[in-house]
Amino acid sequence: MAEEFQERTEQATPKRREDARKKGKVAKSYEFNSAIVLSVSLIILYFGGKHVWVKISNFAVFILSNLHSIEISKANLQGYATYMISFLGLNFLPFLLLLSVVGVGVNLAQTGFVFTFEPLKFDFERLNPASGIKKILFSRRSFFELVKGFFKVGVVGFVAFLTLKGMIDDVVVLIDSEIKGIADFIVRSGFSLLLKTAVIYLVLAIFDFSFQRWEYEKELRMTRQEVKEELKELEGDPLVKARIRRKQREIVRMRMMHNVARADVVITNPTHIAVALKYEPKKMKAPKVVAKGINLIAERIKEIARKNNVPIVEDKPLAQMLFKIVDVDEEIPPQLYKAVAKVLAYVFRLKNKSSKVSV
Image: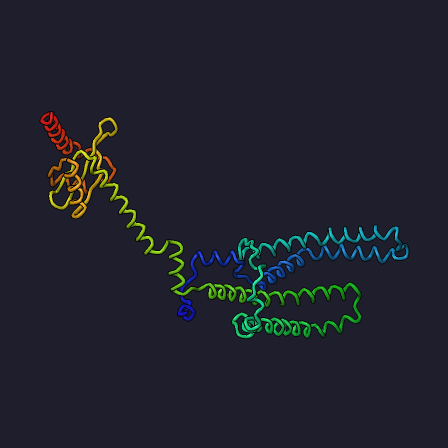
């Protein structure tokens, strides 16, 4: 319960960001997409509009010049429709395809590739009227969208009003102009109005994009407790990990103690270090440390060695070196061959003497 009142002061972790993307939650500005598409449309219109205008003019002239000979019937209606569609397709389809590519590209640039059915899943929370009213009336996003809507209508309308107001004197002169002059004036005026609108819309889109990114980061923020819980999920509970390590040490210790009974010799410090060695010439290149320990573990090693008649040799320097540089189940390094060989030779001599005495 206390977690609900914690402030979300921590930046979102990579896992939280990835989970949000899987649910389709990404920072995205629809205004930015529209502004870029509109700007590209104006660029295309500026550089390719004349070509399209000539094509349309010639087509209109052809149609108007041959109206007297055109007969509309069931037999030729399909032919006229096919010709009209092919004309429009050849002249406008490339521009529409280019705008589609631009729209998809801008969208991918904002969000990257995201494919998920998560937003389509049924959620009872979406049917909650109280939750819906709260999102509409009392959220930063709703307030921003409201201000943005007023800004678009107000500023764009004001710019359009100023632009059209400045054209009033030119409109009066057009009364005595030819059709071509009127058409040119309409095209220039329309393009000028679109250009000014696009500039304002682009500024609005940049601001909207910045807000969407800020709002997205704000929503993804986490409390310190959430960060801790996520770390536990990723790395495991420290208490559980400690119990596992303790269990692993117990298993290793039990195996070590079992190996002591089969060791050839135990080298001691003599009081607080014990290292058990095993050497099988046919299987090993060098003697191997099968168990080692300090203090209580060392005493336990010596106790097992006595019960199993494993010789215990006191060699303080050698015991310290073996304990420091050789791990359990590892062979001794070459620099210790000579010292260990002396100990083993002594042990083997003792074994031989005891075997002769017993005989």
